[in-house]
Every structure is written in structure tokens, then in C-alpha cells.
Length: 224
Ligand SMILES: N[C@@H](CCC(=O)N[C@@H](CS)C(=O)NCC(=O)O)C(=O)O
Image 1 (cartoon, protein in one colour):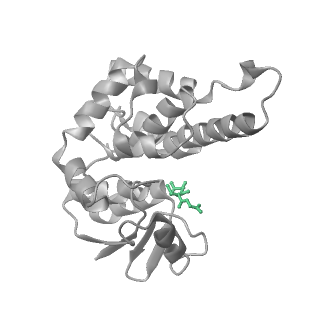
Image 2 (cartoon, rainbow, N blue to C red):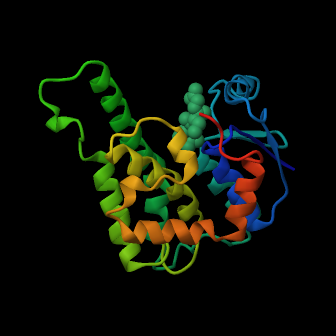
């Protein structure tokens, strides 16, 4: 049984979502309704104390992208990823890594810069929006204008990886640094991106996504 160390509303939902799509049983470890308690509890599972942490027998892994690749390689039976020979494979690999390597990184940086600027307003605010999140969204929008999913016409794990940074970037581009709107499908910042909105609608309609959200947030969106 795969054990997913989890915090409600956080990236660990990706792992549960993948398991739901693959029909793999899993156990979630977290303290319902207690974000800080869930975070502190992660300390027992891994020195990095971050979610997700996967335990599979004597294997312990961090890093959501690596965890998804591990599960697909061991239990995926070729599902939810294109074959290396497929024309969709380059885009798949790119988006799998772009999600955390650039998408989340730019969104987090932008939010940090905005937070610091709120505390100490700089004389010139034109550099606050460093173009990080807006570029991430434009890049994603361009891809989704060409293909239904990030790696072509089939849903893959790259879509699971990209879901979180799209929501984060949308909020960052309009200067929202609070996390709560992330959990409430707040799409104000995504208004200029019709393809991304359509993509998020498609994801929200997936039974695997709905099951994962019901399991990872059984009492609804967390307070923070
Ligand atoms: N790149 C990592 C990021 C993991 C991460 O930072 N997770 C957040 C929750 S979304 C966390 O646990 N933050 C608490 C902390 O780092 O103290 C991944 O994709 O797994």
C-alpha cells in the first residue's frame, strides 16, 4: 500500500490524484483540519519535512514530480505517459519538470517579492511583477491552444503536475499572496487565459480529480 504524507490543499494532492486515475490504493497520513499539525508530523517521515512524502514498503521519496514518475514506472503499466518514441514525449518531459522547476518557482518568487514590497514599498513598483508568472501562463496558454492536454490529446501525469502552478501563477499575477484563494478555485488572475480556464474545467470534471479532492480535503478547502 502506498502511503502519502499529506497536507490538505497542498502538492500532495497530486499523488492522490495520480493514484485515483490509476486505480491504485493508497493511504493518506495527515491530521484533518490541522495544517500546522500535519506539517510538524512530516518531520517523523523525512528530514525535509515537506509534502508530499511517499512511502512504499522500504522506499521513501520526496519531490512530487519524482514521486509521480516512480509510481508510473512501477505501477503505471504504461498509462498516463507517452512512450519515449511518441511525438508527445518531449512535451510530456518538459511539462513534468517545468511545473516545479519554473512554474512553481516563479510563482513563489513573485509572491515573495510582492510580500516584501508590501512591507517595504520600493520607490519604483514597475519591477515588482517580474514577468515570471505571466510568462508561465502565456507559455501554458500557447500549449493548450495547440493541444487539449499539456502533452497532446491524451491526459497524462504532466497535467497533474501543471494544475497547481497554473492556479498559483494566476493569483501571483494579480498580486494575491494569500494561499486561501488557491483552494477556492479563485480564477480572477486567469481571466486573460481562456485555454487555461477550459483546461481547469476539464480537470475539475474528471472523476479521478473529484475523488482525489474529496479524499485529500474531506472537510472542504482548508482555512490556510
Ligand atoms: N518541489 C517540492 C515542493 C514540496 C513543498 O514545498 N511542499 C510544501 C507544501 S505544498 C511544504 O511541505 N511546505 C512546507 C515546508 O517546506 O516547510 C515538491 O514538488 O514536492
